[in-house]
Amino acid sequence: MDYSEWFSGRLTELRLQKGVSARDMSLSLGQSESYINKIENKRTMPSMAGFFYICEYFGIIPQEFFDTDVNAPAAAKELMQELGKLTPYQTEHVISIVKELNR
Image (cartoon, rainbow, N blue to C red; front, side):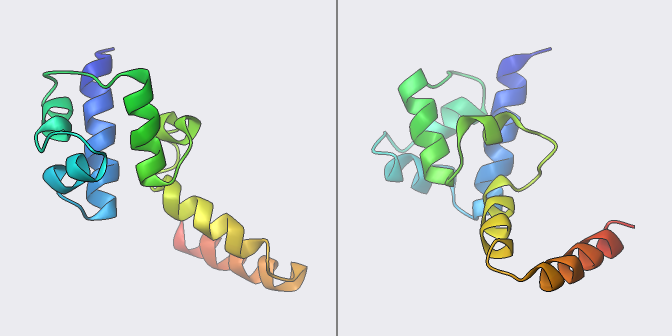
């Protein structure tokens, strides 16, 4: 497996879900405006600290970055937080809706 290819693809996927440009994300991380572009184009990889800042920027933990079974980890995390506020009856309804959407 080409890990730099996979990493850059996952980073791009999450960045596009957030709806930000590579330049804006780079600047938000306190880096040069080409920082994310260089990672996405496989010219460099972030340091471990840089990776943690990237995860923090997306509002996810590193495990969620690598969990490709979840397409939108930040949204899934938000959904779980909201589900925790529902009654068991309401939660069952939401589960039914999600199962219907997955058919």
